[in-house]
Image 1 (spheres, rainbow, N blue to C red):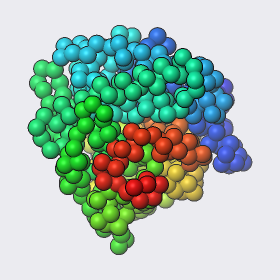
Image 2 (cartoon, helix red, strand yellow):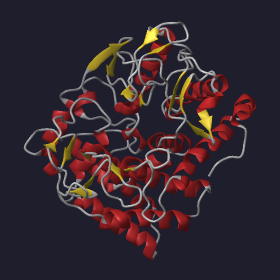
Image 3 (cartoon, helix red, strand yellow):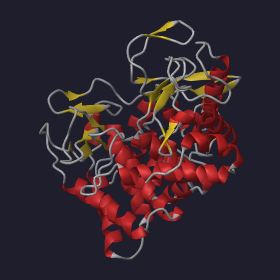
Length: 442
């Protein structure tokens, strides 16, 4: 699904469009990624729009979560969305699970990257706890949405429940307090744990709530015990540099007004903390300590993304080191002038006015960050180039597109948040983590 439109010209004219028109166009284009970059035989979603890209199981989870939004927006029929969903669930239900290095997964969890055609492990990737969680979150979203009394939707619900129950989160503790980051068939668990603030709240919620292999609250406490708190303009701020960390779990869970012990001790919540992360990003971009081109109150978005390779000369003559894919962040870096143009729009539910202003400014100043109606992964205007964008990673990234579809919808209608507030799995996981207040009744 693409728009046959000159987006450079469209960006210049967009100032005459209402916010609703702009959002509808961008959300619909982002949704189109999951119709275009999918293997219809197994439902796997490609990691990026590059030819021969493998499937990302996390992108597949975002795609599953986006199908119900497409139905409600009239971009896909309910029957088509249900059929696509069931194809995906049937693939994972039947995919090989073993210690074999070429399986699709093990212990009910899955390798980060799978071959788009065979569905088997590729790129020597790890069995990923967080990516498995994002995939399963997508499955549970479809189960919460497809509730009609017919064979297809009944199978969606039963398959999602089975796949969730099969995931052995307790195995991934391996005697330690917190969950391990991942596992490889030849070397075992990776030498890192899911501790300190990260995108892993959704992982812990699902693991705590498991009907078959639950972890205990002591594991969640081990996760939160390593939180790094800062004070920003007199207010507590739970630090994480890359912006995506402050967004991913929020795509599914409405954290407004609910607190666990870690944030309650600082009289805040995770939703408010994300608002402060946005303020930190904007303040950093205004101060622009690295002196990079374009940064300002309405041009910001430091997060994990691809960037230029090898050292280069910038437009002002300075020599800058680059390292490709890096978890860029503010205010402590790293920072090399590379911006994710989609990031401000993904902040829409938290700061709608700031998000829309930044999105409009981004498209006005750097129209090349849109191709086929979709945001590119990243750009660096400090690097000399033939266009204002300088260096441009013009591929679309499945995670970015899915996050946009979901966050725009959570702003417009609250659809995903509403669905999962009523999901027993999410409620149980939050309760077991110690959350209370707000919409989460005791």
